[in-house]
Image (cartoon, rainbow, N blue to C red; front, side, top):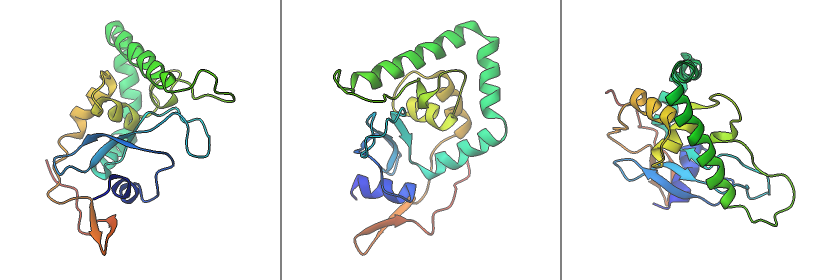
Length: 175
């Protein structure tokens, strides 16, 4: 299956920029995509890694609903070494994204670290995506441990008459 079509089915909308798959599940479907710092319409986009896996999105949404962002901020506040590691992640993320922007580019620029965050932890989905893409991200690492394995028995998408669509038979696996 075409990665762009799979991502469109996972997101239930077309991607708004070119994509590169940064991480795949055991079924070889995209989990995380890398996206450029500007969307197709020129809008600055601070998020370099976007989570597409419906299972990971579902589980992380539950973690956030249960106070996961506040808990992560509490852990960082309680440990200066972890807080420094997190700050290093934010600096690396912004620098990597900024390297993709032409020096002579005019107009607004994407800012912040992971997911555009300037202070604290903004979004566990973005933190997880950065970690799943192979980067050092302590908050993404914690989130990954809580998400558990992405162990779907069937794919989250299927191809019907050459069109990729969400799999109506997909169910969240237990772990």
